[in-house]
Image (tube, rainbow, N blue to C red):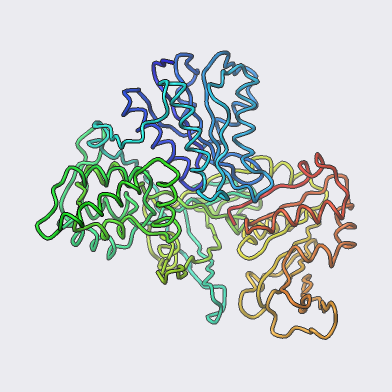
Length: 592
């Protein structure tokens, strides 16, 4: 089956769908097939759809079965524009999801059905990758790719490692915006004794923004200079001030210091393609004088395993790097005696630093103009960030790149091209909130962020809000516990580790009310109390609340498994809602 071109379209929440799309494009190019990669939003620039082009969609599922932000504009056009017509347009769809969530691969399944209904011709069946599989999404991707190759080329994908020559010299294209902001505040809102550092960080952005609940702040972190300099001087053995060309279309040059602090993510876990490049570079090189022939063959076998597109290769990548979150820098250090990548290969095989998304946790209501979401000409944005800092099974200390970057920000610091306000992916949420007769909000931990913004934005409208949250202890991690709640808001809190638990009774849940909050100080014997337990304890109260009007709304924030699914099941027990009513009345926000 021959096509003039293959267009690979991704919708990526965390970068995985983009990595898979890029890998497929490179494999196609190694077979001599012209291909390119764009996000769903970028695809709008290439409309109308061409019928001699194969469109391969690789789409993750986010939130309430919705597509990621970088796919949303195309999604909305596809599902709302009655003029879209795709008769006989060849398409293939692969989804990325997690079967522990109720809306498993919902975005890819909806997309697949919509494309078919518009007349598109599916060249192979839908593929659904599952993070819960032993090999992760690779368990479904490997046979799906084989079917795709059999359709295109009449054979499964070749297992030998092929790196297209044109990609090896491909330059990075840098896009910079004139966007600067100031850090107004960075305070820890958990106690020093608490195991996790949770912070409220405030930025002042020079832009107008009319706030909608569930809006997000995209933060593009930077690699610490000390880490980048160590990488450049000890692994690359270069000078950080050395200039290299990075732009694809002109001769723009940047220093290695800029490249490895602001562009390439050397702290990310390496992709499959990275190991392919590493293996081919190793095969080109000759063993050093200090490397025995036996050691050379062992390293070659190891790199071949890591680069292989087989179940065994996927398992080896999981075992060696993915599960321990081994970084690109650590992998290159492991093989430093045996192989060295040049700058062009590094730019081609290392992911660019991608933005991280955080729910805005304030309403952005103007101090000068009531109801206008700005402090003209600036907007002050607060986010709630749990710092990712842990030790792996094998004792490796890990701190998230964005966590480290945000934790170290200082008030008064000016940041360029780092943060950007964006609309949240739940496009239906603002309209549902405006029409809701009452709103039940559910959130453990930092999931409280979008709920705090919601209650601030509705503080004067009178809509009844019931907030159900969970924390460990009122003295250590009661996030935003000092906020004064308006009369229309009630908050119920589950404490998983209160100071004292009365275990003398079969079930103990002592309550006290203060400033609109209901505090729980007991727990079920033998286990902790979570936010989902509140639905059994307060089932009558919740039933009465959700029947205050004809259009109740339930907003579930956070993605800690199995909380969302258990909350949904408890709500259905209490209300008796049908599946259609559940879909109509419940929305999700997973940024918090």
